[in-house]
Image (cartoon, rainbow, N blue to C red; front, side, top):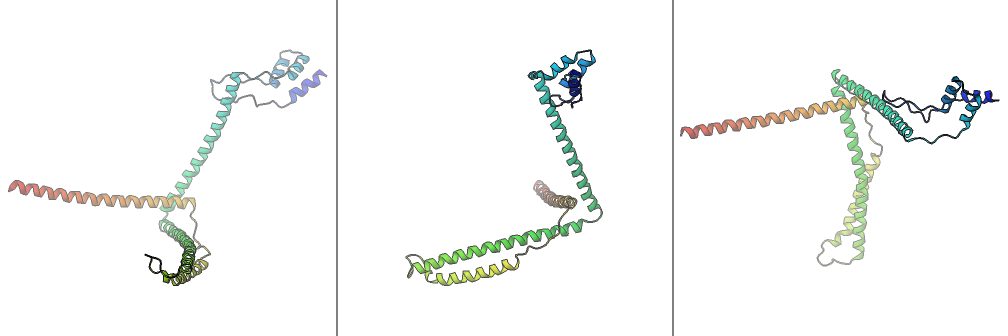
Amino acid sequence: FGSSIVDQILASPSPTSGRPEAMNNTQAPPIQTAHEQATQFLSQGGSTLEVVRLAVAPAEPETVQQRVQRALATAFRTMQAWCSELATMSQQRCGTAMAGRSLLAGGAEEIVLAKKASLDATIQDARLVSGAQAEVTTLKSAAEKLRAQAAATSGSSAGVSGQGDFAQLADLLDSRAKVYQQVADLLQEPAAAPTLSPAELDALRMIEAKQQCSIFLAEVQVGCGIAATETVRTSRRAYAAACA
C-alpha cells in the first residue's frame, strides 16, 4: 500500500509555481518541492511511511525570502518577454527603413510623391464633401430663423433695417442649400486613392526630410548673402569716413 502511494507521488508532475527560475549566478538555491523532497528522502534510505507523511502534511507558510525570490523570478520573466518583444519590433522597424531606402535608391521617388499627391487630394475631397453637408444644415437653419422673424414682426423694429427682406433672403438661402445638397449627393462616394505601404511611408518621410533640409540650406545661403553684403557696405562706409 505504501509503495503504491509513493509511486503515485513520484509519478505526479513536479509543481513549479513556488520554484523561481534561475536569474543569475548570485541567486539563492531553488526551493525544493514536495516531489523533490520525497525523491531525495527515498534515495537516502528514508521509509515509505515518512514519505506519505511528507506528502499529506500541510504546506509550510511561505517565508519572506521565498516571497522575494518568487517576486524577482516573476519580474525577470516579465522583463525577458518585454525585451524580446522590443527586439522584434526594432528588427521589423529597421527592415522597413531599409526597404524605404531601397525604394529611393531604385528611382521610385516620383512614384511615391505621385501616390502622396493622390492621397492628399482624396483627403481634401472628403473634407470638402463634409463641409458641403455641414453648409446645408447651416443655410437651412439661417433660413428658418429669418422666416420666423419675418412672420413675427410687422414692419421694421426700431434700429433694425432690412426686416422686410427676410422672407426673400430665406428663399435664397434655401436655394443655396439645395445646391450644396446636390453637390454632397453627387460626391457621396469617396474618391479612390492608392495606399502607401510601410516602406513607401518611410521613403516619403526621407523625401520630405530632404526637402526640408534643402529649404533650410537655401534660407541660410540667403541670410549669409545678406550678411556679407551688409558687411561690405559697412566696410566701405567706414573706409570712406576714414579717408574724409
